[in-house]
Image (cartoon, rainbow, N blue to C red; front, side, top):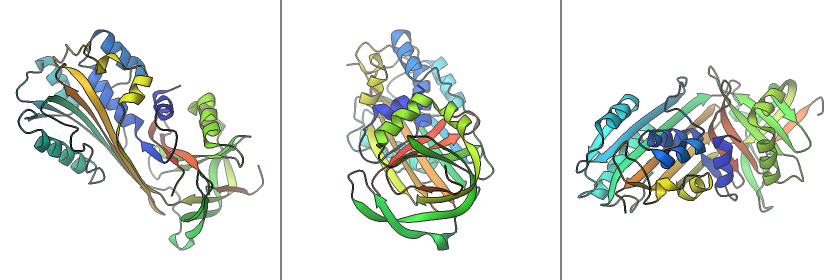
Length: 342
């Protein structure tokens, strides 16, 4: 099971969910560069030895920065590594923790085109904070086959608790998409224009729970699902216009489930960077879909403190489903989400 799906399963299993495994992975990969011993091995095992480098297309903007306190001295070789892959910001956590928190939030807001404006909430940074490793991702792409806004209509959607509500459903009739169906779910891939990314929808069949479908995807693996997708010429599609925001959430418990323990303890070994332990990892993400395309953004902050099949197929997403923005080249999940309550 890859990091994206492991983290997906470790996060809350009820309600809407949207996050960027890539953002979390990139932040933790930079953290691992400053770690040694068991601390380093736990992080690398959890993130599957992910690199700090990513080769994305123009629709994805990625930025990294490390904010560190002027009263400490991080090792020069570590700072040199960090400067090659992002920015360096000298701040004063000790005397001005909340001003520094606002400064970090402003950096994230600018990087995500104002989509993520309050990654760090009041109290998440205090005078004991020494380092914040921050990653931000912004994604914007048009559908390869745009929806006609005139055909978007209010239609029924059944929420996870069985309530029927009205949502604006976008609509395609008899179009060609890559598609797969088995006795558990329908899978639909909708590509974005001019890039290697696509939206992949996982819609449980009637009578199948979302949890069953998620387990099924974990069992099949993304590579097998992608290989099973075939072009179908007559697919009628109903998918909701979505506007979701998830977070700010602490990922500490989820990351501990993935095997990262020592980094959060007094036994943490960040001697390569000469810093203390990780106090928390914060994440926030948002997505907005319309007839033209999608805009998504996410940010992650690692906060460190001093030690202490029919001829015509109908894909009607009128019930809970989960989805991904996937890299068709590497099968990496740039974003993952669960949509259960409009």
